[in-house]
Image (tube, rainbow, N blue to C red; front, top):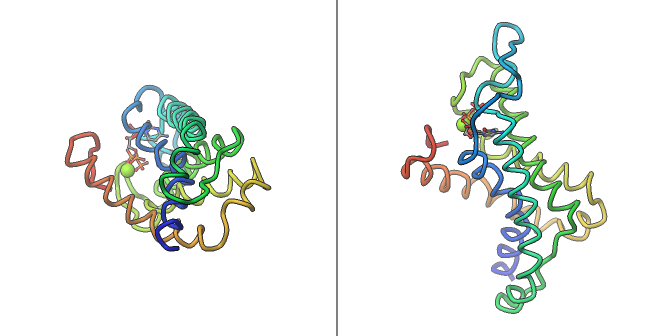
Length: 180
Ligand code: CTP
Ligand code: MG
């Protein structure tokens, strides 16, 4: 069923979707690169901070544990057996999402883009790639059982759409400086 497939994909990626938004709200303070430059440009830039990264990782990991608590109820309501998250899987999804976003900033700076500049494609998928890779590394058996090919396909198609919608909303509500 397409609906249960979409529900499963969305549910499974929630611990990866929420960290970037938590980082936007919690960000600030010392940048990870400490202001250092490479080739005349910042290594990462002021938009990647220790506090934002830690907050995003923590919120995503705790969210996964919270989802475990409501899984039986939700699975019953949706009529699908939604997965639960071992701690390693929740942490992998959350920290991986933050790392993917940090990697994208590294690439943005190397290609001459200032902080906040858009990099279409990369902006929408960087954190998905990071989350999937780290979840695989942290919990390989869980990953193989959970991210079946149909679920992966829905994640790849659905995430850029969700990313655009949430970022435009965050910009409109004044939480973000740019709508991407
Ligand atoms: N943020 C943070 N730490 C992170 C990621 C995000 O503190 N690891 C916060 C920063 O305040 C950042 C905001 O969330 O400005 C928005 O995140 P993002 O759009 O990823 O950063 P940008 O400022 O646009 O910088 P970049 O061009 O490097 O993506
Ligand atoms: Mg940005």
